[in-house]
Image 1 (cartoon, rainbow, N blue to C red):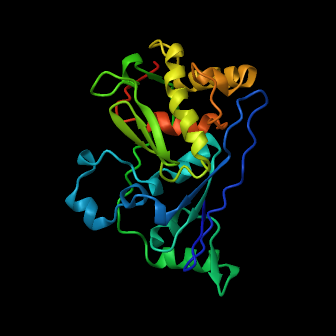
Image 2: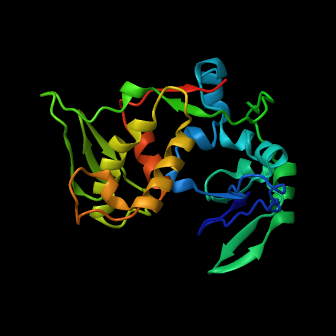
Image 3: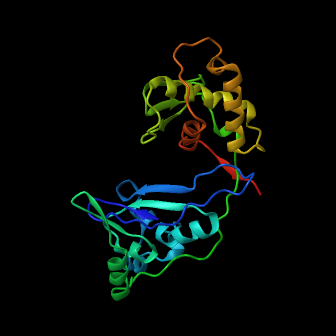
Length: 252
């Protein structure tokens, strides 16, 4: 993990692992910023652990999974952090920014950690980190509004009106054109042809992207439109996962 901040630029340096030959390309590192992460995702301190028992908290905090993520999945983490010193305990490289100059303070931080051990209890239950394919339920992607009319429109890059819901695309930074959002709205309808209750979402999106590569953006609409711009499969995946009506089942 690499932990960074203007106050304390921490880096838990876990070497990047190469994917096995023939394996599907994937991210070898993840970048997280404390300022944009939910606090209860990052850490639960001793007092909160005493008040809210683990059985009543569905989230296992990232601090308890960071090393396992690397040891089992070969995924490193770059983490910008300035408020939770307990992360010293799971870091093996710590960099502090001093007047905009990065300084390696690993030994000092580890000594602090040794003299002031964390009082919180690790909540890692040693479950293996496994990835399961998710299959969308056919009827859960519905473009029809309360008047039973197809309703897909947008006037903002990060706000897509789809059927009875509004898809909030805030922080999907790769969306830069309104035309991309319009195309994504139509793509949500297009992929319904591949949603059969058996096909995983990842495969559905790949099928769409292949169609776009072969036929172009015009396949997204019954009429030729000059108001579409190309997007990546990742942006479509973001939109699908933020659709409130979406229902998924996990492939066994």
